[in-house]
Image (cartoon, rainbow, N blue to C red):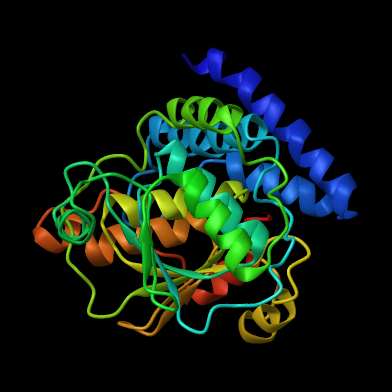
Length: 310
């Protein structure tokens, strides 16, 4: 089982090197990303070292997320911004593992459009009933545009609507039957992540996530947000987005995922730290179950740790 995962890790390292060459990043950054993704977490005082299975789980998450990027041929990686932005936020009801939902998210990344996302995983009770109430059926994705009063199902129809309404170019690689087929394969690679709901506490305010669809680390965070049914404001900052400068001015560096929780005042980089924070703040740990993950890193440790590089 372990040996079977090594080829996937090797392919991931190769793809990371390709991204380094494409974006002219330093070899040190590439090495940092590779080391962070494949090394076991450090020993924590008072606790035994986490088991090797957990380390392999993290390595598999990163490697399989990279495979998803390859299957979708980089769709949602580069921004080709729409000519105008909506005055009011678009509302998207979807779930991460749905290939049709991925089609819409890729278009949002390429069109450089933000959206208020309401996760609707299978078995979810928080937002799925709302879709049935508004649209008459539980089908996804479901887009609501408060600027025009339009509400619609069907990913192809949604993408065409966004393109025509907001003056966006034709999406580069996210249309047609190939999108659905490769999207379904991508969902299979992630083995059900972002597909089924888990018990959680609903936040008073939506969280905020800076991300873009092709980011392998951001995908891990979106899966957790989806499974916990946590609504969030999605800020797309794909490569070439004119809004990256504003994001850097706020966060201090160009690195995603970046999560801000207005309910607690926390702001975090690092996909592993964000997923751990979401689980411990809103997940099963809130219901009396002991958290099995290691604690969040201290600020000093976080500054010295290798970052997620996307």
